[in-house]
Structures are given as C-alpha cells and as structure tokens.
Length: 181
Image 1 (cartoon, rainbow, N blue to C red):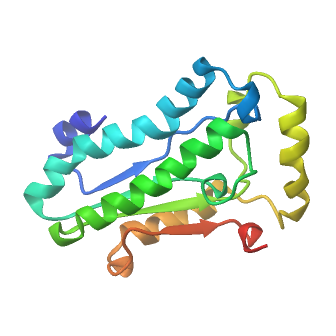
Image 2 (image 1 turned 60 degrees about the vertical axis):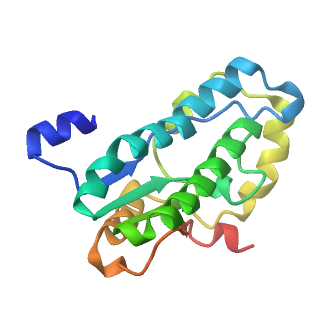
C-alpha cells in the first residue's frame, strides 16, 4: 500500500490506519487463540506494520502525520469482547508511544476513538457469544446516537491538517458523548 502510494504520487505525507474487525463479544474465558490472533493481526499488528513502513519516509522529510482509528472500546472496557477491547487499547498505547517518540522529528501520531458508527464492521462478526453480548449491551443504552463515517473523516482531516499542529500523541473520542458517562 505504501510502496504503491509512493510509486504513484512520489511520496506520502499522511497515513490513516483504518482497518478493523470485531470479535464475537467473547469474554476472556471463552476466547480462542485463533480469534485472539485474528483480531490482533487486523486491528493492531497492521497499524504497527504500516507505521513502521512509513516512518523512514517521514524521517527523511522530517514531517508526516499518522492517524490511527482506535475505538471507544480502546478507552473503555465493555464496548465489545476481550480481543477487540484489548486490540484497540493496544492501538491507543501504540499511538501515544509513537507520538511521543517522534515528536522532535516533525512526525505527529494521533488516534480517533469512534463510538458506534454506521459501517460494515459488524459483518466481521462470525457468531455472538450470548454471555459476552449480554454484558456488552448494558452500555449500549447510554450511546446518544450512531455516527456517520463522514463525521469520523472530518476528525481525521483535522488531525491531518496544520490546524492540529500542536496535537500529538493523543486520542480524540468522536462518539457523541458516549464515553463521557
């Protein structure tokens, strides 16, 4: 992806890591190693690998922006199952570490923590764990509303722009106030 971008456009200035899949709402006692690995491969390892790939380009230019899509599940403990929650918490930690480590190199790294948004991520659920889903559903009534992908894109555009030049190593919740409770 990054090689193709550089080949096509000559460079890359902004990386948005926006791949993600759900788990099946499994609590820790029910999750399989295969499910854990699958969720972490997409939600966390892909973020690390694309960031690692783009950093030499950004370091050479002494400039670049990374925007990671985390989740309200990366800020709270019960927005999904154990694997999804842990994977998005890892994205939050990776974002903060990357932002801090490269702050003096002209590179910023931030994350967005969306709440419920109308996307196709639900199609990655292959079966619901009844116990996990019943526990996860308790907080859904607190969700003020479902967002639109365009609303998250606007936050990403802000983070990618010079208007956010003093914003680094942080996570912006874009969730209509869901995590405020």
